[in-house]
Image (cartoon, rainbow, N blue to C red; front, side, top):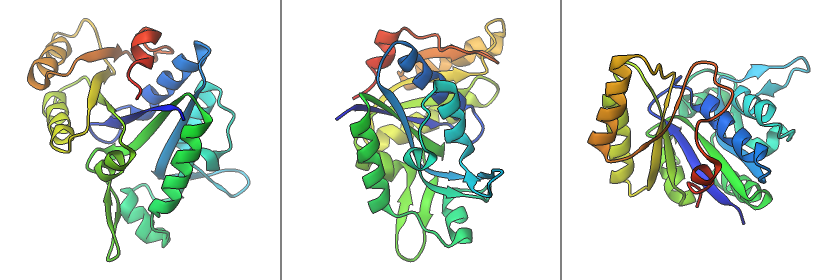
Length: 228
């Protein structure tokens, strides 16, 4: 049974998939058995064969050299670029926790280090209908694994990051650290954002990622130590 880490973001388009890809790549480049899993992807594109391609998973698969079948990486793939709960309604295919559990267990047992990527922010609804209400935070609690928060570096990130961390603490979900994406080291505001995020959350910023980075600026011992 492998160790796991859940990667969530402070919202949509903060670079969660990009950072996740760098994480999995770093572990694999160090010779470790590292894999990837995501419960639901919305906004998937159609490939040349007419099949839906989960772009997030495909990106990580390519960057990290996983060469895994897409169905092993993602449980539910939806075409509409909306919240997963709405995408599921539009596709008439609600997220099924039994399938998610089976797929997660299989992925966890296939690698020493499994990185699980969330959808949107931590309060993103995955299923919300007359039968069941499932949020991303519910999924993390069920998995029982720690979280790494990916945040932007620009204006507004203090509020978004502090609220995300506070919600995780409220849910009794352990937070291992924060990664600031699209970070510009010479930018005074972004330097201050880093300092304020650490002071206001008491959670360390473990790495910053600049635009176009091909590696994660975190030593492998620290990175692998985040998994549980």
